[in-house]
Length: 364
Ligand SMILES: *Cc1c(COP(=O)(O)O)cnc(C)c1O
Image (cartoon, rainbow, N blue to C red; front, side, top):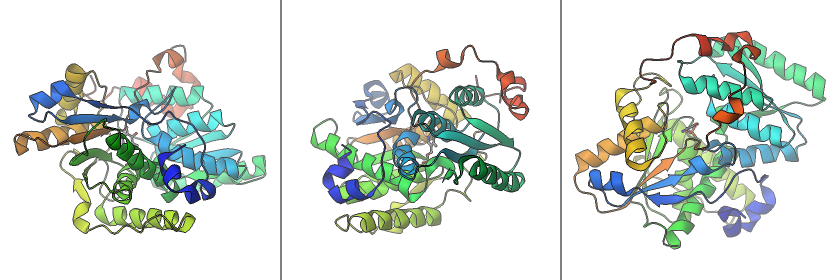
């Protein structure tokens, strides 16, 4: 059972949940990199290993979101993202497993090899994918799509916001912090002084900060922004934090009301590189470094930029004797065999560009 549910049985009774992933996810020490950075207590919490065919941070959110769709008898699920969205892919895979038909509305993005791989994998798991050049061009077609699903299924589809970052989805990361607390208590790692995590639609970071404080851990959370500031900022962070806290208190009054100071929302803006999914030299250097020093596979859109911020903080901070934790949010399961035989020409035409046009220069 989820650690959060063990602590708050009222939540187990009131919140929808489906078992989809593999938890707790592993924790390990990154000895080589830690030594090189003057931080011997450097640890990895590997949410890349959260699933059997596809891991990463979306699985924890989907356990609640798809659990809810299942409880409501939904026949299809509609979600949104950029073309290479890990969230849209994870939603397709796990909805399909539960017998719910996945539909994704995907926006144009900078090209990289992972985009094509994710599109093929989504297709292999039954995702119906629609491509749009901009949010504005998608609104009317999205409404039409919802209407056609209503006609076909006799009910509205479940609608999951980008990144799965609704308050219910965020609860998955509140649980993740309780899971970490249990690992600290079991002696698998010391209580981290700082935790570094990527900040996209913010659900991961918001849930972690809420869960850390509710569980009684005082680790500082450093959120490394990898998307436009209009989607990820301190004000929106606080809003999602409060809504998630309210949801939990409402479901079980034993869950604490958590107050945080503004300064606890620590967002690093300087590793974004100006555009979502545009790889940066620092980010790609961090990807290489993790691969060679620890055999950990990161990528250029989220985790490379986050690791670059961690490396920068450790280098500029001098010797560090307290524990620092990197929270890996990127899928670690190799699914190349599953897509090897697939022909991209079977995808809707607007997606062909991700296979035919060149990738960005840093994607080597
Ligand atoms: C979606 C995603 C994130 C961002 O998580 P949010 O909860 O949207 O902030 C980070 N890393 C990876 C690999 C992701 O796919």
